[in-house]
Length: 119
Image (cartoon, rainbow, N blue to C red; front, top):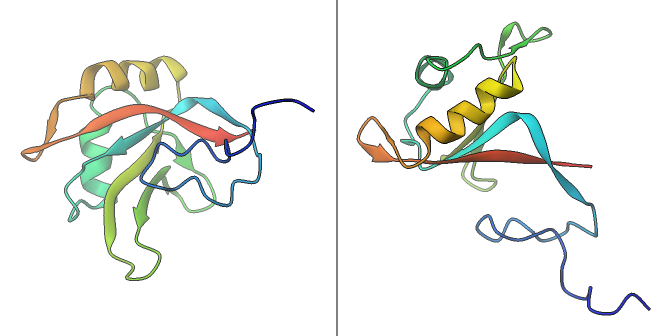
């Protein structure tokens, strides 16, 4: 009855990552950025140093390390060149998008946007 919502699952957008979303709504995160195009040999330490230059990266208290998640290929386990970085402060996250989007990390052009999370 709601009209044209057929086929609008998962939001798509990120390289076919939208399948199986089953109508979960995604909302923009306040304090987390999504980064595409990072060198695939980047470590959490590299990412922490690079993105930490604009603001304090939130610490994962359980793991006792910065809240950085590097995406890997589900089949091969190889890094996909994508990650999320969570800042202590939402303003730092917004500044990171403005500052780093379209810039280079170790010679590779990167795309930075606010991450989306399941509502």
